[in-house]
Amino acid sequence: MARDRVYIYDSTLRDGAQTQGVDFSAADKAAIALELDRIGIDYVEGGWPGANPTDDAFFADKPTLKRARLTAFGMTRRTGRSAENDPGLSAIFCGGTSVVCLVGKTWDFHVSLALGVSLDENIDMIRDSVALAAARVDEAVFDAEHFFDGYKANPEFALRCVTTAHEAGARWVVLCDTNGGTLPDEIERIVGEVTAHVPGDHLGIHCHDDTENAVANSLAAVRAGVRQVQGTLNGLGERCGNANLISIIPSLMLKMGYDTGLSEHDLGRLTHVSRFLDDRLNRTPDHSAAYVGERAFAHKGGLHVSAIEKDPRTYEHVTPDSVGNERHIVVSDQSGRSNVLARFREIGIEIDPKDTKIGGLLDEVKSREHDGYAYDGAAASFELLARRTLETVPDYFKLQKFRVMDERRWNARGELVTLSEATIKVEVNGELVMTVAEGNGPVNALDNALRKALNSAYPQLKDMRLADYKVRILTPGAGTEAVTRVMIESTDSEGNRWSTIGVSANVIDASYNALHDAITFKLYRDGAKAK
Image 1: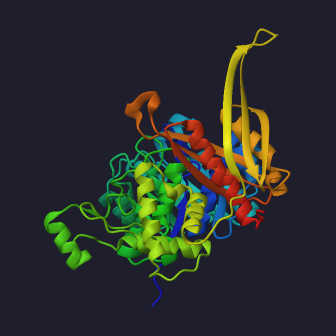
Image 2: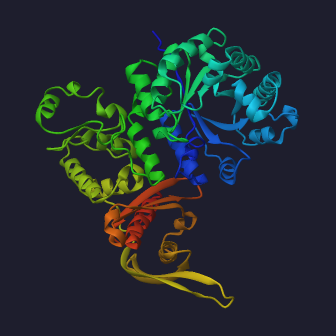
Image 3: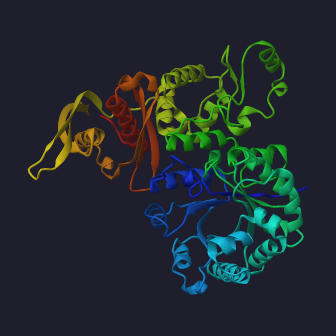
C-alpha cells in the first residue's frame, strides 16, 4: 500500500536571511540550494527578485537544480494597479523560475491597518495576482499570511481568501502562523475545518517558532490533512525562527510513515546538511539539536552505557546512521566507521570494510577534529586526507617558505591605504620558483603569489578562483593568541565548487593550509600529473 506523500518546501534562502546575524551572499545561496537539491527537497525558495542586490545576483546566475524546483517569492499586486501592470509583481517573473510564491493578507485587521483597503479589494488582489502567476509559470503558491490569527478573528473572510487563491489556480495554498502564537491543538482543529473548503493535497503549512511549537504545529497540520510543509534548515528565521526542517523531515519519515522527496540514503545526509549550513554561516552548531546534534546520540557512563551496549533501542529513538549521525560513548568512544565508509562510496573510493587503514584514518580524523578541524563543511579536505591515508596523492608542489607583509600608509592623494604583498618560494616539478604578488589583503596576496608560481606548470589553475573565505575563532578566551579555523570555498569555470579547511594559531598559516588543499584538490580531480 502506497504511503501518503508530503512535499517539502525550504525557505532558508529567504526566511533564513531574516535571522539576526545571518547575511547570505549570492555564493552562499547557490551552495545551499545545491545541497538542498542533492538530498531531494521538493521546493527551494531562492528569494525575492527585485527586492535586493543579493537576490538579483542569485537569480541572474541561478544554480542548476536536478531534483528541486527553484521558487521565486513576492507579494500580491498593490492596490490601484492591475496585476499585469504592477512592477513589483512583474519583477518576480523575471527570476526565471517555474514556481512562484505570492504572499497576501488574510487577517481582516491587517488588511485594514497595513493595506488600508476594503476586504473585497483584498480578495480581488489575491485573485488577480494568483491567476496571473498560474498563467505565467508552472505552479503558483499562495502564502496566506497571518491565517490562523485571521481565522480566529473572522473565519468567513479568512476562508474567502484561501478559497479565492485555490479557485484562481494556486497549486498550493499555505496556511501561515506568522507570529508563531498558535498552539498544536488549534492548528489541528483549524486545518481540519479548512480542508472542508480546500482539499488537503492543495494545502501547506508555514509555522514560526515563537512558542517553540513550530515543529509540533507543522506535524499537527500534516495529521489534519496538509501535504506541503514549509520551513528552514536548523530553524533559521526572524525572531525565534521558523519550523526546523531538520527535525520535521525525519519525524515525518521515521515516526509518521510519510513519503517525502528524500530517499533513505538522502535522509542519511541530514546531519551533513545541517552542519554544512552552520559552517557556511560561520556559526557553531547546536550540539543538542534533535537528530543531528553532537549530543543527540551521546551516552555518558553508568547504566545508560551498559543498556546501550546490550540494545541501543533502550535510549535511542532512531538509529544514528539513519540521519547521518553517530553514537558517541563519552567514556570509551565508539566511532562512525559506517559514516566513513559511506563517505568513501560518495567520493568513489573502493575499500574492504575490514581494512585496518580505516581505523587509522578514523583516529586521524578524531585527532584533527579535536584540534579544531571540521570536515562536514570541507569535503575536499576530507577526500584528500582519506586518499593520502589509503592511497597516494601526488605532491604537485612543495612549499619552501613564504612571507607576507602588510603596509598601511598615506598615499600621494592623502588617502589612508593598506597594501598586502606576499613572497613565496615553492618547489614545482623539481625546480625552485620564487614569486611576489600583491593582493586585497594578506590571504589574497598569498593566493596570487602561489598561483603565479604554479600557473606555468599547471595551466588548469587559471580558471580557478576563491568564491568564499571564512574565519572562526576556536579559542576566544585566548584573545589574539586564539586558534583559528579557515574555510575556503573554490570554484572554476565549469561551475564546480569545493571546500577546504585549515587550522592554526596563525591565521595566515591556516589560510595557506586551506589554499594548499584547494589547489591540490583541483589538480587531482583534473588528473594533473606531477613530475
